Amino acid sequence: MSSVAELRVALEGVRQHLCEAYSSARSAQALLAESHGVFADVGRYHPEPLTPPELPAARDRLDDALRVITTTLASLDAYTSQL
Image (cartoon, rainbow, N blue to C red; front, side, top):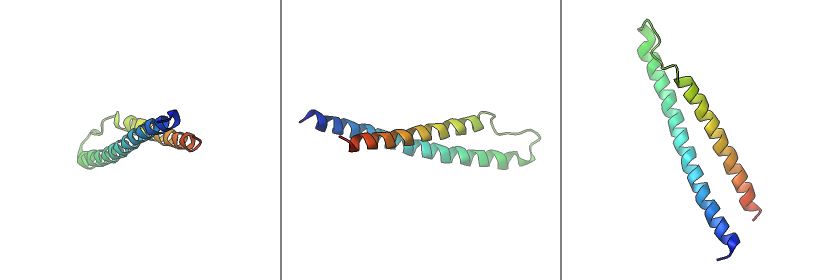
């Protein structure tokens, strides 16, 4: 196998892992949104907010991670197409 073919195989493995990470992050994003809704519903009549203060920051970090994964996938695809 040529070194270019080996590189393509390795990059495809990396791409698969990135796609799995993206899928997991999207699932986590949906679950965080769902949990936020549950906290809001349950806490509606509670005198103090029940939503953990870390939740918005976690959602922001997850959004950032999704942007990084998406950008990395685009760069990887562009690089692979040039091989």
